[in-house]
Amino acid sequence: MSIFQSLRRKLHQRLLQQQLRLHRFPHHSIHFDKARSIGILFDGTELSSRDVVLGYADQLKKTGKSVRLLAFMDNRAESESFPFHFFNRKNLDWLMRPTGHYVKEFLDHPFDILLNLSMEENPALEYIAALSQAHFRVGVFSRTTHCYELMIDLPVSQKLPDLIVQIEFFLQKMQSTNEAAAV
Image (cartoon, rainbow, N blue to C red; front, side):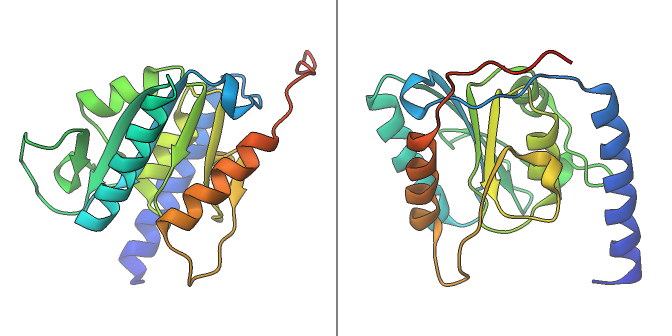
């Protein structure tokens, strides 16, 4: 990573921390079976990842869950033929903060569970996860711990389907019989 990219990343993190101080949304665990609305963030640049995520979204819809998808496309794709909303590099400001109608709509939706299915750190997707109004946020282990209530640490050899299996395993174990303490 160049000095320039490192500086951008540090400024991105500093501005995100400032926004998080203003962003007060209660997060709490929820059992996967009780979740009705699921938001899925993913890197849709590769066709293979898109196919896995779309297949998983269809599975969730068959169980009666409402599912919204938002992809980051690491190119300048303009196609309207995708079956999901997306943003790309053109929608990132200098500090890698995503903008646009679909991003705002996704941020404002109070999902029961938000899943970031990106296998690698992605500042734009982590930014959305961190500021999301989702009740419970899940993603791959990263240095930015403020983005998720649950982080899944996978060996490098494992792929997106393995991440999905792990997420479902842990979300099925969630117990939310106690309410959060008043602050």
